[in-house]
Figure (cartoon, rainbow, N blue to C red):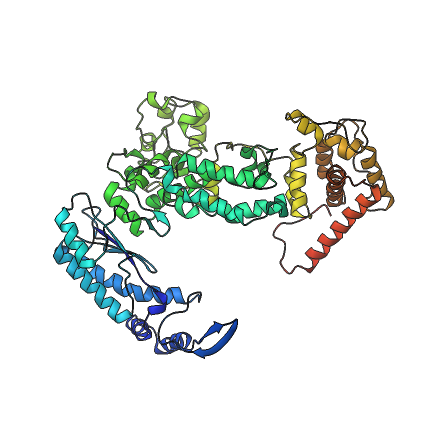
Length: 626
């Protein structure tokens, strides 16, 4: 059975004498213990009555919540309970603890601060012993178990009579599920989408407190990355979320980025697949939820392969098999959902492994990545189900004198691959094969690299976006997002909206002579041309920047970047100011003037320059094109 305990006012009830005794038993120096005593015993509190503090009083026990030292001190106190339960679990007849495999020790409890989960046999003798341990600990430490909020879950094989006896000993109600532990739901079998419905609900609750009209698109990107994307991270590190949940979370992020209000309709002008790409590839660095989930599961798989000393890894290896056979194991009906999810991401994990040849006995010749950035099966476009000697190892092609058997290699692969294999050095001694993570320079696994590899819309050999220079400009973030939309031809001009099926007058509202598209707004409209001429006259930019007739604005900007045109940042801010004047004309009927447009650009440039000059934080991104 599993017993989930709820500690009532856990921090406030810690006895100081018990804490100091724990520190002394753990071997802390007397001077350090005295410092801790001063920290916890010199506290004073005041009660506010009618908005005024009335006197002070001093506590005699408890730790202050919010103090960065308090969690560590509390954990040291709870460690006493963990040690006592562990001592009892070493005795097989005690019944305390649970074994998930015969070759590993029992797990008596799972403790994280005041979240306590205890495992034991559902018998009267064991439960009396466990209650005795809990009562002794509570009497010494000052803790108090809230049995009304605690719960017990029994295994399927537990008899009804034993359930009644155990429930009477602890006076805790029997439950069919433990609910949540550390914020994650505990369940049996395959989870349903309803089990994780709280994740979209949390995101929507966050949005309800945000005024969407007050945020620029740059601000929305920051909020998505720092808040909305972070909310489901804890659950995604443990489970594979259902597709309905990940799609719902992505839809919430997309709507928040494009919509102007909670109830209004937004028009996504750039595909979400393109938005969720690295900035160097033309995206905004946002991440799809399913890809992040895959990366976290790959991290667990990487732990199984590389961290044998990890407590969780030891138990998973003992229950399901050693890491040597991890890629060959088959899923069983009785396997846990977490393990089944790990088995499903094995192809992705295997794709990221890069093998270093030792004796070659651990490397599959066909399917492992060891001689290039792809497996031989992928390079030769072979059918995995129709391979000659599919389980053949690389060691079969290494001679006794530690040389490559080129004659045998030519029987299986073409000369181009044979020549590449010959360039791989072989050790002179019998050294085992080793592997690393192929998507980082250090060879260590990183969730960031795995996340981008998990995005299905990102190819492995994608060329960089030609406009990636926009992220190095020294301009406001909201202007960078504006320029990003412009380079993707995704500004909501009248011509663009007409092509997307919105019925409206496509003529330019400033001149009423041509269809309003991006090139017309910024290059051909008489009002825009006067702005550029005025900027040159006032010596804010050296020359007219767009001199190639027939070229699009995007092509012109790319040429300016390649030629390192001086004052490119000012040109971009002037483009943004022209766009603001256009919007003011459409939505507020404010007649734009070339001088007003130029002055707005100058003012915004000056404000940004002063703000950056007064900032004490150094810029993490080098800037150019001043």
